[in-house]
Amino acid sequence: MTSSESGTTPPKASKATTASRTSTASKTLKAPKAPKIPKGESHLALVRRARRINRELAEVYPYAHPELDFRNPFELLVATVLSAQTTDLRVNQTTPALFAAYPTPEDMAAAVPEEMEELIRPTGFFRAKTKSLLGLAAALRDDFGGEVPGRLEDLVKLPGVGRKTANVVLGNAFGVPGITVDTHFGRLVRRWKWTDEEDPVKVEAVIADIFPKSEWTMLSHRVIFHGRRICHARKPACGACPIAPLCPSYGEGETDPEKAVKLLKYEMGGYPGQRLSPPPDFPGKPAPALGAV
Image (cartoon, rainbow, N blue to C red; front, side):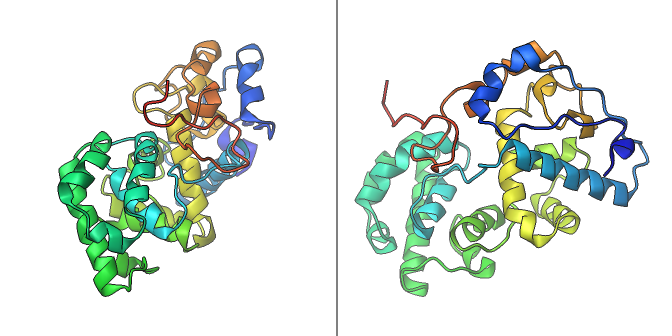
């Protein structure tokens, strides 16, 4: 999409570390211009704008990654199940003790429910999650030889595993492209007017039609990163948003640059991220362990 199609020239995101960018943001950042996106935007124009947003996000978050700590497909599967109705940070603080106690599906399937409940209590809904983990561990042991399957149709048969969890595992443990429609992803694609669908399966189908399959996994990471760091649910930091000129919902949040930059979270705001063991290229600080001061 050209600058004439969007109505303005979007700011170029720097490839410098996020920490250095945010430290000077209040001094250098100018309020983004309101976008000029026609109400009757054609499908072709929408696709071009959506792909432009993805390219811009790739510049802002070249280090985007899954924010759950894991060392193998089994750990990622379990961590993703635990992440329901809680933060990735709380899951990452909880799983070290869990995986130390139950490193394999066979170990987990044989766990005493009450003991597992105590280990995962910090993630909330611990009784229901314990039931799911025991069920999926037993299924992996009995039906898949103790290995996590690499097909969506097999993963969604496991207790507590839906399409979102399956796509997380496929994309990040097996390299199979998938779109992760969590609350952040759904919120942002609706704000950007890529779709007005609310059902995650329908959202996934619409977005899959806009982007090539090779982009699905990284697109998911970038959108979720943006939703957690800048485009928040209650008060988006519009005045600090690098894709504001492409966003039809610009103005829903704080547009003053100096006020907006104070709303940035995690490494964008100079704070620790959600992972205790982040990738080597992550520019932020590792999260603290559970109970750490």
